[in-house]
Image 1: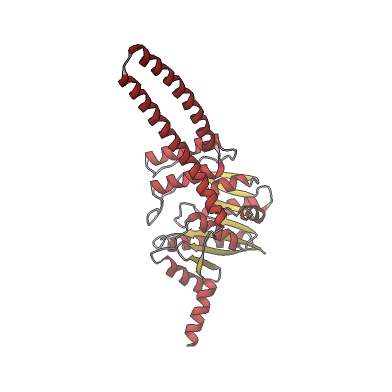
Image 2: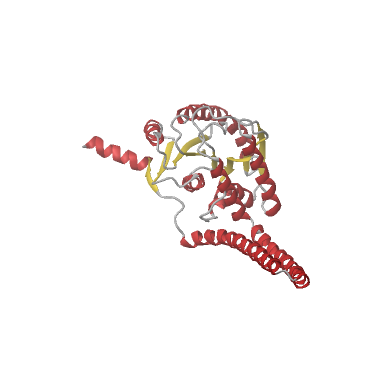
Length: 325
């Protein structure tokens, strides 16, 4: 028998979780009918939800032995959720997908067919359209992929998603990367392995709202840049050198003019402009260095990527003790 682990990070998914569970059950039954050697486990990661997501997961785990869950002590972010799922998965194959049905469960049979024969180590989806997104958000997303692929040696395919069907070998390779500041799109690409991309049109959420704000996505894109490229450090060095040369030329020009014209105000203004320009550039470059230093600081601390508060085994034991009493 081959076990497929389906990892589902959740954050405030109370409205859409029953719809997802219903759809994924249909797909699992379909795959079992086509491949009688398949078994499944559903591993939900509750990322510190503030609604009734955990309550629903408890109910699902009690009535369905295939359902497992891990509930964090607080919100650690989707990256921590995916890592926790991969780390605790037991399957020969592992799927990562969202609960909002924007990652259509109907793709799972096709993805399994690509991976099961060993021709591909991973099957993933790639959005060819961004319908339902604002034009500004879509423009920034495309700009991010263009910049990232120019400044990084790790190629990240535009529109590629976290919705992935992976072999155990690939999952183990990902788990060997223990960094605290994680950017999974880059990690999936960095570890290599042969990947099949399935193109599809964007699907909107059937219920609930996305927890990703524009600012949150912007910060996440910076994580990717700082995690997989040192180009900002190179830019700072080049800008610093160019600015020093420009400042030196301007200083010579202003000094010559001041001596010839005999205008004290000109000398003062020139010195003030150069001072302000260089000070601003130094602050800019220091800020870039600070970003890399902060990442190093967090890595050196070696804090856990997530902390578990509860899982289905703890809850079942608690319920068993309660019934005995």
